[in-house]
Each structure stands twice: as structure tokens, then as C-alpha cells.
Image 1 (cartoon, rainbow, N blue to C red):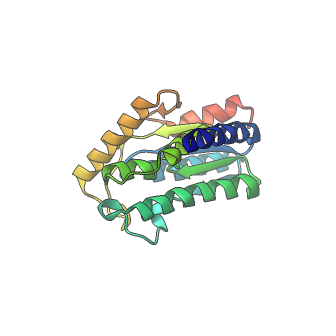
Image 2 (image 1 turned 90 degrees about the vertical axis):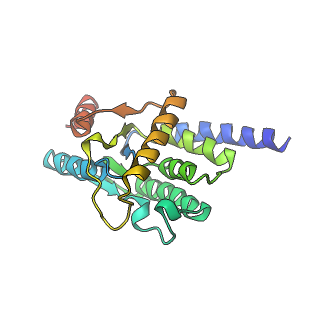
Image 3 (image 1 turned 180 degrees about the horizontal axis):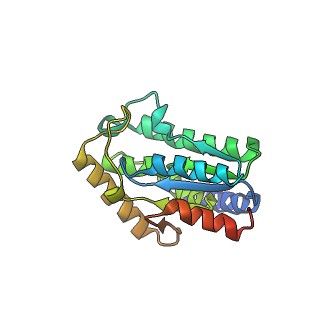
Length: 202
């Protein structure tokens, strides 16, 4: 009975979330394992859009400011913190940012995928909400590790086996959730610019 009540609440929240979505700002997210080139793509996109006169805001990866252990030392608390911080950043930007494009270095679901690696179970209702949250992104790009570099930035692990295992989990989640539109492109920056042109932004 409690689950049925919770399910109804989630469905109600989904309807409200979709109705509350406004035309601007457009929200773009880059997801994938560490060392895939996501951060580079974020700043390259921002640079190109600014040259075209588009005001943008970059939301940094939550791992950069997480006060708790991450990578292989992650815990339930650290993954919940990163999910909450990601959603917090996006909500604040949605309501305070006056420009037209928000660029997210990762999405709300990334922390869940890392939790899968650590065999850290998240509540089913939270997983459901995270998949609904993915629908708030106008463009969601998955970047694999083939075009990136696993550099030591002092934040994410440089363990290549860890990188490969996380990538496998991303691939599995995308495969199992085909209703979520995830774009794959070797030129994501140009894809975003083309999308914005179609929207008549410049």
C-alpha cells in the first residue's frame, strides 16, 4: 500500500515537472566515465557559444566540491551528496540564470552509476526519480573514453580498469533505458550549436 502511494506521488511529480519546464534556459549535459573529455567539451561549447553572443553558464562536476570520499572509496553518503548537489545546482541555475544555455558537466544520474560499481544500493524510488530527471535535459550527450584522456586532475581516479568498468555500467544503463534520448557524437559541440540554430537562438 505504501509503495502504491509513493508511486502515485512520483507520477504526480513527473506531471508537475514536465509542466513546469520552460523554454529557456536550455539545459545540456555531458555524461560518461572519467577521462572521456566531458569537461573539455563543456568549456569548448561555452567558448563557441559566447563567440556567437549566447550567454551560458557551466555547472561544474559535483565531485570537484564533494567533501566526502569518492572514486573507489565512495559511500552511500557521498553518492547521495553528489546527486543532491547536482540537482541543487540545476534548480538554482534554472531560476536564477538569465541567459539561454546551461551546460552541465555530468548529470544527476552519474552518481547512481558510480554507486552501481561500488554495489551501493540506492532506494528504488530515488532511481525512478533520477530517470525522470533525465527528461529535464534538452540535450544529453554520452561520451565514451575513446576520444578522451585519463589525466590526473586530483579528483577522479586514473585507474584504467576502474574507468572501463564505469563505462560498461553507463552503456548498460543507456541500453536498458531506451526511452531516454541519449545522443552519441564525436562532435558534440557542433551538434549543440546546430540544435540551437534550429531553435532560432542565433
